[in-house]
Each structure stands twice: as C-alpha cells, then as structure tokens.
Length: 106
Image (cartoon, rainbow, N blue to C red; front, side, top):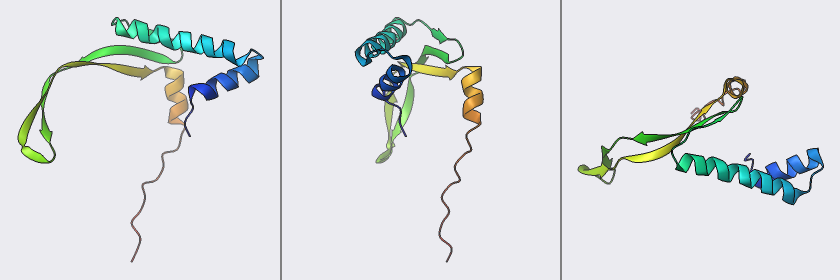
C-alpha cells in the first residue's frame, strides 16, 4: 500500500477536526520549505523522523546493457539522501521480511 499526500491530508483532517484545505495548505508548505532548503544545499533535520541532505555523486563510467563494449560517461550530479531517525529505524525493523518466491517443485 502507498500513503499519498491526499491520504495524509484526509487522515490529519479527520483526527484534528481541521478543514482538509487548511491541512493541505500546511502539508504543501512544509514540503515546499523542505524542497527549498534542499535546493540550496542545506540539510533538513526532523527530530525522531530523519535527515534529508544533498550529496554529490561522483562522475563515473557506466555500461550500456545493449552494447556492453560501449562506455557511457555518467556526469557528476547531486542527489537527495534520507537517513531515518532512530525511532523510525526501530519501527521499520519490526516488519518481518517477505520470503522470496520459491520455484515450483517438479
């Protein structure tokens, strides 16, 4: 299952009694400010949730799977990394991993 922004707004609205449009405005502004800070290269730290930061991936040489003999230069670029907080990491570790699908026995 996927939790969408709409699901988040509906749930917060139901639990808080606020109008959905007000909740949507607050959620959207929060996401906008996070994106703005990251676009400036700033780190965003949300206690008990996690840390978003911009990292620069080094330039490297890749391979084209359709033509493995051909080198493809991949330029340096910035990416957003997320490191979960201690409490979130502990909650996620409680999830039992799914068993890999097994081949049918003949």
